[in-house]
Picture: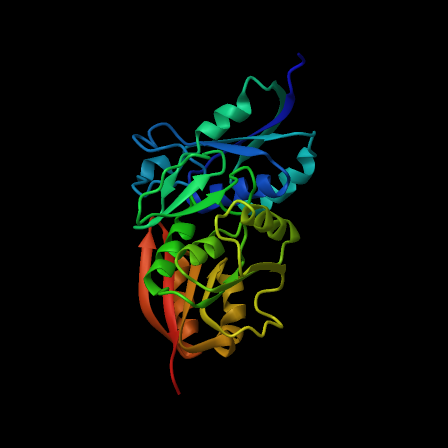
Length: 312
């Protein structure tokens, strides 16, 4: 039997900065990669799982100048020139190398799947890869099933965990939730598991919406969850009890006014995707627009903000 040949692309870059590695990994997924493996500098992940998106916070200064290797596989040959141009925009002046070759299957897909185990992302929430068909949940455990081979968020990243934990704090059952920048749909599914009645997920990228719809089919509860292509909250009329947005800060600022109009009295705004160094500037802008910060949570170098609209 002839073995499957995969097109293997290896990126080596002189950094271990979490946000840059995440952006590069996400780029590969967006270009059609069927899997990404991240190998950090020696010692960087001592006693810590080597999973995409899991970034250890005890990063010492001496490790900042070490290389990180990202190995990714495609079914078809890719244009390295185009990828290099995209990576240059991410890494700026940082040196990097990009190589392409072929590799026989050698059960690579099976080995890749072994990296993804069920993971608890909050007190009651667990993300389970779709191939764990007989996963036995605890009585108080809420389970979200995902296909990790589909891009746009697998639950490993701190920003996703922070968003899920914030939803766990504010949802009591029966709410309407708007998920802006839904990606894989993970936070929409979390909201459903926590008792939200109606969930609307929006993303500007049609591929992300396709990913979310595929993952929706894996969920034990699929009713009243809708995904659609949309630019933030532009043109949306659904009144919401909770709005959650896990996207970059320079994009987040563009939804503050629409969010204020759509939130019901005493509604919650949950913001994620914020690097700690960018948080103060964003908090100042929120305060200027009448938002009241109720809680700020930091995980590794990422920040989640929980806000209410100040009553006039």
